[in-house]
Structures are given as C-alpha cells and as structure tokens.
Image 1 (spheres, one colour):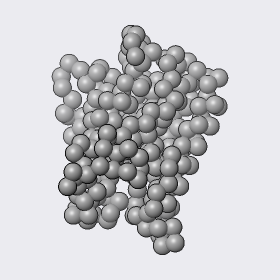
Image 2 (cartoon, rainbow, N blue to C red):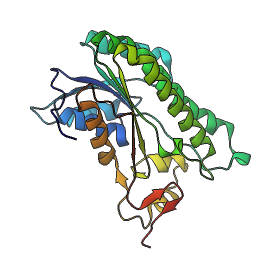
Image 3 (spheres, rainbow, N blue to C red):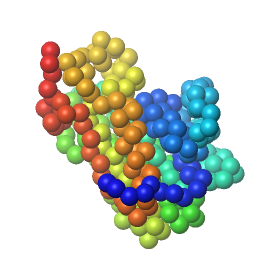
Length: 261
C-alpha cells in the first residue's frame, strides 16, 4: 500500500499484554516509531524493564500495571491514561491458551481462564477506553485474535471457543463504533514462536513446547506480528484493515504444517 502514514501529532496508544511476547514487541515497536505507549500487564517489573529499554530520542513507554480480567483495575488504568493526556489507539493484545484437551476431557478451569483472558479481557479494555477514543473523533481499536477463530482443530476446543467469541465481539464492535469514526482492526496470527505462549499452554513443559515448533523452518516471531500491528494502526485513519490473517509460509492451514525434520 502506498500513501503517507498518519501524521497526527502526539500519537498515543494503550497496549495490553505488554509484559511478554507479541504485546511486549508491539509496545517496543510503537515506541521506536515515536508513540507514547501505555503498557498494560500484571507484571510491573517486566513493564518497567520494557520502559527502560526504549532508546533515547524515540517514543515513551509508561508502565500501567493492571489485570485485563478485572474491570475495576482497567477503569483505574483508564484514569491513569486520561490524567496523562489520553490516547487515540488501543491494542488488545493480552490473551492466551490453557491445555490441549479434547472437548470430552476439557477442564472447566482452563476453559474459564481462556474465556476471561481473551474475551472478558478484551471487553473490559474496550469498555474502559472507548470514551477516550470517541472523544478524539478518530480512534482505533486493534484486537489480536488468532487463526483459531477461523477454523477448529482437535485439542483446541477451548481456545477455538474463546477466540471465536472474541472474533464475534470484534465484528460487532466495528459495526457499533463506526458512527463514532472508530476503526476496528482484527489481527489473526497462525503459528508464532514466543517465549511463553505454548510453554504456558502446556503447563510449563519446555520439551513439549519445543516439539510444537520442531522442524518448522521459520515460524512467525513476536516481532513479525508487532510489525503488522504497528502498520495497521499507523496507516491513514480512513483506511481500515478489517482482518489481517498472517501465518508462516510453512503453515498452509491450522492442520497443515511443513516440517523439515
């Protein structure tokens, strides 16, 4: 795509899930391009290290410790951001998976956690910050879902259900907020190799997590997805990238992966 990037001054964004993985990479990328980034996650010490790593002469990262599954904490986070000058962009990156059980064996606590983090977390974040976005007259919401929202796979029922629900939320939000000139972007990655996602999903079993990526020549990285997210919120505001699906070339579909070994 050609054309000038958005030239509005003082671009500012909230990024959730900023303590690790795609969220951390996205916050860093936006700051490198001059944005003020309010980095939201539970682990305050990781947010602080992220803020301290921003190169001089670029943007700024402001740590805002909060749990997206707690609406009251997100309301307090909104107040912090509003007091500091507000934002025109919110990137809902926080999410995750627990377990690979089939539906017949799925554990309720895993399904509940996935729904709370992926769906309720997006809802809490969106509800907290929509008033600020509407007030700008040109707000943007980006939600990171997954290709799991597009096609089910064995052992993924809980994650499929959560991401499909999140996908439905995004579609409704786009229809509802267009009257406020808010664009809503959905980014749907396939296989991404990050330090925590699969490890957490598999209960901390590093060997099992390594097998997920074994033989895949070039899985996506957190930085790959961060580049796409940064681009999507930086193009001129009249351009809405409704849905962006990205996968490594080796992954032709959720169920087809080329492995060299």
